Amino acid sequence: MSNRIALILVFLTACSAGVAKNVDLVTLPGRDTVQLTIYNSEDLTLVKETRQVTLKKGVNQLQFSWANTLIDPTSVMFRVLEHADQIELLDTVFPGQKPQHLIWNIDSKFEGQVKVEVSYFTSGLTWSMDYVGISDADETKMHFRGYVRVFNNSGEEYDNAQVRMIVGTVNLVEKIADLARRRGLEGAALDDAAKGKFRGEALRQVAARADMEAQNAPATEAPAETKMIVKEGLSEYFLFTVAGTESVPNGWSKRMQAVEAVDVPFDIVYRMRAYQYGPRPVRFLIWRNDDEHKLGESPLPDGQVNLYRQLAPVGLPPLADDGGRPSDGLAFVARQQIRYVPIKAEIEINTGPDDLVVYETRRMRMERLNFAFDRWNNVTGWDEKALWNDTIRNYRT
Image 1 (cartoon, rainbow, N blue to C red):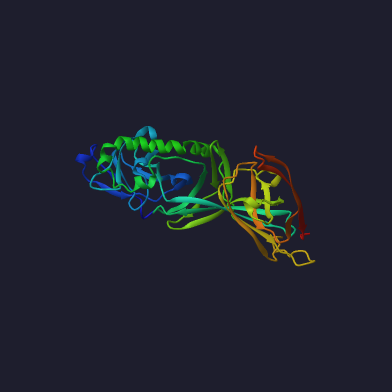
Image 2 (image 1 turned 90 degrees about the vertical axis):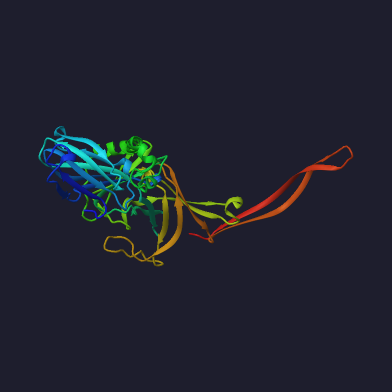
């Protein structure tokens, strides 16, 4: 169980909390499950966790604390998953003497253990993508991989969590981190208690579509040797789900493979644009996010691409490791940040000027003709005609 988020259950033997006697104070067990849905564009994460709670008949009190975390208190929700027809959430109280605490008053006609869900929005969980492409020695095809790295600076430990990442833009009027730093419901927030409820609901609607799609998606098991990513289209958003569960400790980051394509063909294009790239030819590697290039299952999020070329001894085929991959060394080719790449869109990496391709231009002759004159016979303009000789020398094979 987390040492930061505390849940405490108070069993009341009387029907009213005000006249309760023989109060039992019980600390709830740790989470059974936890799911993180991370929206990068607004530093927003929806957390859904399940726990087993033991209830007695009558009024029970459940205390929730989010001290030293970045949880938005207005978004905290409680839901009974079992025996819901016998259990009613009466109200939610934010005790003034206990900042960063709330108490759920629960009336139960059922006695025993039930599964409940606690959900909330938090800040401090983010993710990023990076890509690695390794071409063969002849530069005709590459092995292309993409990795997701999840960062946890939320103040909370999340063990064995299902991790989901949302590609897309979400706009919030108030930042989750700002809401989380408020001490309970003080000052103007006391008058805004009802508004806080609606704010939490509004935030929840932002994630509702992704959550609904994920619930309907088939379950994915975690392979023993590697983590895979399940991609699902959600209109303006795209959902990446890591198979299985991952522990994401506070203050740590975790890197997981999300994309892999083998033998991806690509084109090499040279551009001579002095106004844009300078006086030398610039070399580009170009391929598409589509089936033809062994990709196209999902859009590719923003991220940094690192390209390498496999080295091979002159006149000899490259060596191979136990997995059949060449292992005789890599040459760094280029590093570039790419923006979001939709399906079928082009990926273009600038590898810089190429010393093995030389471009020269020389003016052979020039003449002026069609002179124009004013009424005093002064020259006011003319046409200029020039002959240029452009030479390109390619020293590559």
